[in-house]
Length: 305
Image (cartoon, rainbow, N blue to C red; front, top):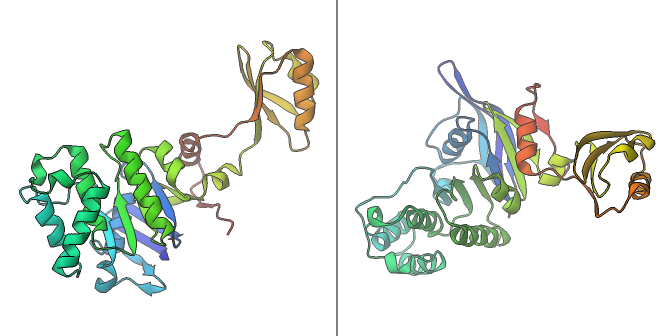
């Protein structure tokens, strides 16, 4: 398990990270989201030892991370971290050997991951001659080729087409199922929602929410979408019901804690046919917007386990 405990980092008067605390559990895909400059990359670089925290700890399996542990981490930087004029196959073998793999094993690993990521025909090409999408695939292969125990991926899906996104998502899930946790950042919130087991939202250097999507939704009011009656007048007959919006056949209502949803349904049916009646489940994009725009600066810890 990767444990981040009270990590803070300043650059002069700029607070990059402010007492950030969370964990990435064994076999977990942890999505890390925030706006540009929120502190995501800074934290990842601290995990890797590229930067030093002003205070706080980073632990792997209960021990502070040292050089030997870092060799067991697969890292993918946001910016291209490959040698542009070096051939793909030679470069991946070189990086695998740097992480301690014998040459024959390194070659087998390169063959495996270039095939898995659909770039085996690019083994003899210079990295700079690849498309951005293929460079991204090779960069992920570089993070995986030595069989890491932990993956730290900064914007791994940037510039990828939907097929490549599916391939990478499948690889992350497969590694997670084998016990290898992954922390990754992305601005593609729909993708983060789809593949992450838990999500951390960071704003202005503070971790403002941590949890699964369902846990992040748990504090929201009970809201129901009703499709059918062209007027929202029916809602006035139900005590403890507030109409949030109405357009055409769609009415969104909020229930007080003691309001029976079946009473809401019966009132809507009395006004006309109801084609759909469902609880409103905000997407991560909306949850993110609500959390980062909240006035309170305190961390909102939503982990229940």
